[in-house]
Structure formats: structure tokens, C-alpha cells
Length: 331
Image 1 (cartoon, rainbow, N blue to C red):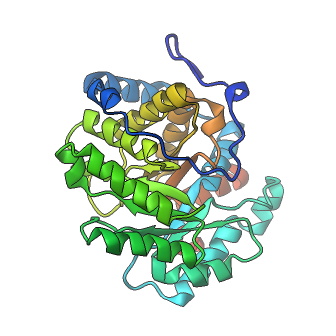
Image 2 (cartoon, rainbow, N blue to C red; image 1 turned 45 degrees about the horizontal axis):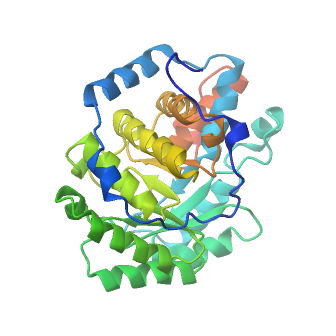
């Protein structure tokens, strides 16, 4: 699935970073000073991808199952209780109905992670004990990052000590808007240290960042500061994830890999609720970065409603008819 002029990263070029944490690199302000993103070109490419690239017939079920493995099943509601965390974790362990899972040889299908608030990390870890499903926690003053820095650092450390394997921190968008890259870099470095050996997923809040060039620069700063993933949005503001924004971030990841040799993951979060759109995102990842990134180690969807739509589509592919949404659990 490559176009003329698009250089893909080949699987043979990949380094094995299993269990690896992205080490911090020096902040390269000169690199940031040369970053320019052509918004029109990004938008044209997205339209081209959505218009030409489709996955059909027997291949669709396989791609949908891949999408399911890349989902961070998420609940970030003030009304979250121990009961709905346990139900969400049960769904994470076995998202597909057992007969469909057997028919598709997907009995070991699981989501990528379960994402919760810090106070609910411990029960989530307990509910997922014995599985290889990761527990992610939001932290660092989620969703706006406007609490005092030490409070945000302590929150990250607390989530890690509670057992979170991944920590989704949020940046102060004001630092990116004023191009205070040194301060932003310093804050993310502090979160990287507080997160220990957990994956650090850095939420940029792209809906607040004003320009694609700013999004690209913030992406690079986060990666230099040790982010293992860069993430579009908290899901609490609009616009959240969009294909042009995600492509901008994917291209920043590609540039970072070519310059440093370090792989960094991508998480598209907020507003992705339909299977067809999720397939467009997967194709975009494949065409921009290559097949190695089509794995939960390097790509995630931050979604909850997407999971049910994927399940409905998979059931339709297997049984030939759509089932009612009432047959699929809400959490």
C-alpha cells in the first residue's frame, strides 16, 4: 500500500524495543526552528487516503480484529465505580462473543490496555491479574495540566506506584502556544522520571495548538523528552483526533525515527467511534510508517464506543447480518 514518493520504514529496519522506555534526548531547538508543515498538502493526502484506500471482504474482519487489539478501552467519568471498572476489565479480557471468537480463530483476542483515573488503577490491576493487558492511568493534571508542577509530578509517581504500566500525561498547552519549548521539555522530562519504567504517553491537546506546525514541534519536544507515545487529545475538547492532525504527528514520528533511530508510538484519541474511520487510520499508519507500527506496542486508539462498533462489524462479517447494539455491553 505505498504511493510513489512515499518512503516506508521496512520491518527489517526495526529494532527490538520490547519493554523498552524511550530515553530522553537533548532538546534540539535548531531542529524545531526549521519545522514547517504544509497544511494543504496534509489535507490533500488525507482526502486521498480516505477516498482510495479501502479494506474489503475477508480482509476486513482481519483488520477489524487488529483494530480491536489496538484499543485502549477507556472510562474517565466522575461516576466511575469499582463495579463498572470490573465490567470494563472483563470486556477487555474477552471482547468477542465466544462462538464468534472460535469461528474466527480469535479466542485470545484482547484490547491493548484499560485506561482509568489514578484512583482506580489498583482495582483495574487486580481485575486484569493474570492477563497481559496493560493498565493505563491519566495523570499530570488531566485534562488541562494547570495544577502546580509538583502536584502533577506527584500524581504521575502515584499512578506508577499504584501499578499503572502506562501513564497518559497532559501537557500545558500554553507552553506550546507561546513556544516555550525549554520549559515544556523540562516538565515532560520530570514526568518521564516520575513514571519510572512505565510507558509515558504524552497528550498534546491538539485542538488547542492552533497550527499543524505547532503540533509537529510539540510532538518532537515530547519525543525528545522521553515520551514513548504521543497522543492527540484528552477527548474532553473538540476537535479531538482528526486524520490531518494524526498524519502530522505520524510524520513527526517518522522524522524522529530517521534522525535518531528511536521508535515512538502514536495514540489517536477522541472522536473515533466508527469501524470504517478506524480502518482509515490503520491504513494511514501503514502508509506513513510501515507495518511495524500496526501493533499495540506502537499504535493505539483511545476509545470506548469504537470497541462496540468494531464488535458489531466483526459479528456481521461472520454471521452476515447486523445485530442490535443492545446485544453489546456498554462498558
